[in-house]
Image (cartoon, rainbow, N blue to C red; front, side, top):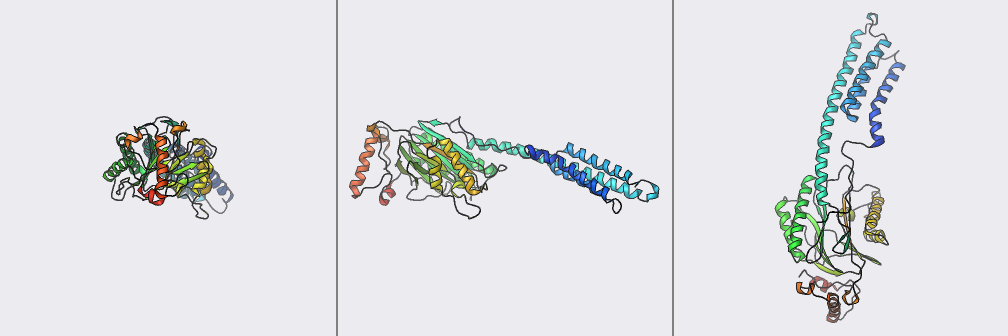
Length: 427
C-alpha cells in the first residue's frame, strides 16, 4: 500500500453553494420583498396585495439558513403592518380593520411555517454533510493516492466524478509490491453508494492479501471471485483487471473489465485476452492470463467503463479511446497525460459524464543492459524458477525465436498467432 501522491478531487460540502451563488441566495428573498412592496404601492387604488409579502419568508426557507429566514419573516410582517398604516387600513372608517388583521396574521403564520421549514432543511443538510464526509473518507480508502514510483515503475492515478454532488461510487484501484513484481488492480463495482464502497473495500483488502502470497495472477483472481461472491448479493459483481509488472514483462488477467491499453511511441493497442471471463463474483478464475513484453518507456493505461462508454451527447458516438489515449500521453509525463486525457473526455462529453472514471497509468522502466533486454512480443509466462534467474531477457528472446520456428511464420512485434495466444495461460 502506498501513501503519497495525488488524491482524487473533493467537491464542496453538500448544501454549501460557493461564492456568488451563496450571496445571490441570501438577497433573493429581499428582492421578492421589494417587488411585492413596489407592486402594492403601485396598485393600491385597485387592489391590496399585502398577502403576497408571505412569499419573502417562504422563498427564504429554501435558500438561506433559519436565522436569516427569521429576519425575512419579521421584515415581511413589519412591511405588512406599515403598508396597512400607509393605506389607512386600520381606521374604523375604512371598514377593513378585520381584513387587515387577517392579512398581517396570514403573513406572520407564513413566516412561522417558513422558519420551521428552514430548520428542517438545515437539519437534513447537516445529516447529508455528515454522510457525505463519511462516504468520502471511505472512498479515499479505495482511491488512495499512488506513489510516483513503486518498484522502479512510475505510477499516476486520477479519479473523475460524473458530478460534483455525486462522488460516492464503486471505482477502485491499487498498487502493491510483491516478490513477483509490482501488482496493480483496477475495478468497478456494480451500483453506487455506501454498499458499493463497502464491496470495493472488500475487494481491495482481498487483493492486498492475495497479491502478497499468490505467485500466479489466476490464484489472485480466483480468491477475489470467492470474496465478492461471499460479500455481495445475487445481482452484485465487480469487473476488474489485475496486472503484474516485472521489468519489461506485463502479465494481465481480466475479469469482465475493459482491456488495459499499452501505449507505445507509435501505437496504442488493447491487451485483450483470447477468452473472455465473467466479472468477479460470477465465476471468474483468471485462466485467461496473457503476458506481454513491452518496450522500455511504454505506458500502460488502466481505466473503468466511465471512460470506455463516454458518448458525445449530440451524436451518441463513443469516444475514440485509442487515438485519444495515444495523443494524451505523447511527449507528456504520466500526470500530465492523465490530465490531458480527462480534458479530452470532458470536451467529448460536453461536461456531461454519465459515470465516474478511475484511471491508473504505469510507465515501463527504462532500458536494461543489452544482455537483459527482452524481446517485444507476447510470450508464455515462465515458471517461478525461471522468473528468478538471471539473463531472463535472453531466455525471452530464445522463446520468441522458438515460436517463429514452430509455426514457420514471423510475427510483428507484440503479436502472436491466434492459436498461440489462446495457449497463453498463467503458469
